[in-house]
Image (cartoon, rainbow, N blue to C red):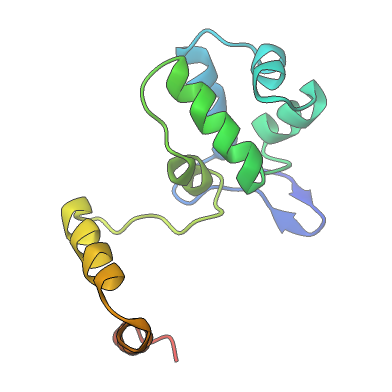
Length: 128
C-alpha cells in the first residue's frame, strides 16, 4: 500500500502505481536513476514516485510519457496521470471515436453553445 505524503495518498485507481511505474521501467530495461536523468528530475524524486510516495506534476508527467513512448510502446500523458490517480479512470464502455466526435462538435459550437453543452453534460452526470 502506498504511504501518505502531506496527508494525500499516492495510489492509482485499480492498482498500485508503484507497480505500474516499476513494470514500465522494467519493460524498457531502465533503472529509476537513468529514467530520472532522462526526464530531468532527481533520482530521489523518481524513487519517491516509484514507491508511491509522490506523484508527478503535469509537466513531469508529459516528459515521462514522452520518454516511456520513446523507449517502448506509446504512453500518453493522460495514461500516466490516470495511473498515478490524478485523472479519473476511463469507463469500461469508453469509445475513443465517440469522444473525438464530441470534441469536434464542441469545438464547432460558438461560446454560447459550448456553455450550454457543458451545463447539459453536468446535468446528465448529476454533478450539480
